[in-house]
Image (cartoon, rainbow, N blue to C red; front, side, top):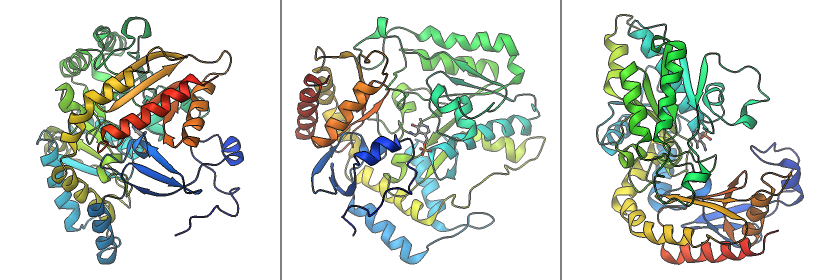
Length: 438
Ligand code: PMP
């Protein structure tokens, strides 16, 4: 294993990274186990973000490591076009169990972005298969993040991710975001105010007519834009309106899937069942890239039995890759055997209290929590948005804790196996950092 600094760092064009700043002061991880990373200098770094929200069961889970090792020696690659391999089918059945059989089918991708673009394409093709080819419009939401494919950035609502990439998909509208600092500051769980924002869908329907609209896509809890939690009743209202107008509802659960809210999915937590769900990240505990789209039975039926008689012409070379399937099957076993969700539930209140104990520290202007997620919003430095939180991120890494920042919001999403001692360590260090931040 190479645990030394690379001879040169000039060629790797790093994703979503301030490349110039990073290369002047790099952060290099060389190993990981349980709740901790180790960096190139031998320091331990407590993982407050489960990597990129993707390691719910903790790092290097022996069962998942063993399953991947075994599969790579047995079946390194197998296509799933016009053929298949047993693990891909076994995993699909297990995933149906994990979703409580609310979904009839699963389509495999390799990432969250691909899952989103797959779901959007499915929505368009679904309506065509049913003889409603006029339903082509897509609706996203401001401050939504749906990955980086052209479909995902078109329905996504982050200016910085869209502005430099041309006209994007035509026929896209955005619902307003639900974040309301004045009315909902320091909320625990679902905020009180804002369910009526779902009614904005009626405005868009009135403008274009329901017969032109294919789907609405939202993150049940928006993660990448700073932990925006849906107001009480908002998602139910959105579901009602979509049903009323024959519009498909897609939940992007790339970060909320696999236990983040202490339930298997966010749709369990909010008791609102969408027509399709996108997932990735925790599906393989982050070990092998994999994404998925779960579809309700009626979506699949439309292709099999609809008047247009079309199949879905879509797929990826690595859809259902044997290593990813092995990792995902083992991950589901770990969830069950190690009672990962029970642990998440057991520490959830302690976690929530610890996050809210930061209220009143310098620069903190809001704290929001749900499940094992937290958003801590800092007042921006005038003329330098994001600089204050980024400085907290760098200090935290130097002090041995991994946090994530988006704009001036610190977003925390630890592995679900964390214990009270990890919570104490994380918030002890974070409090000191906030007290000493410019
Ligand atoms: N959707 C959501 C809600 C996400 O949070 C992310 C990644 N953070 C994605 C899609 C994209 O996933 P990936 O980076 O695996 O393409």
